[in-house]
Image (cartoon, rainbow, N blue to C red; front, top):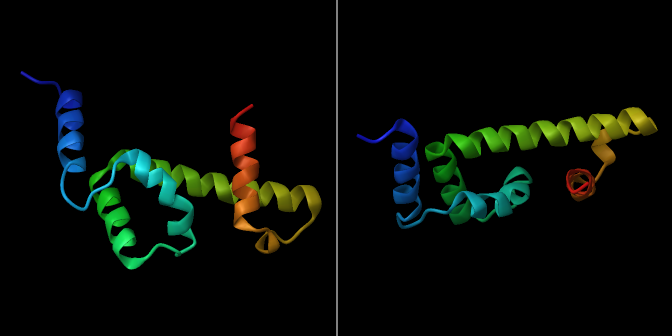
Length: 101
């Protein structure tokens, strides 16, 4: 008898081998382009298909979006700057720099 965790792992492995799918690691590389709506239509469909099948990546994307929003708020509060003027790639770089410490 297999455990639910083992079944999820096997299902995830099977899903990622399907044609037109990406792995969780590959999904991470497309997140910024996806959020900026810069992914070509075929890649966007693959990205969204993966999200529909992978709860962990949906949770990761939600946490990622929350982190970006909090970073924008923190910068706006610290500097009195309207956060709509802050380039997205700058916010991402700041978050990544903080995560490596």
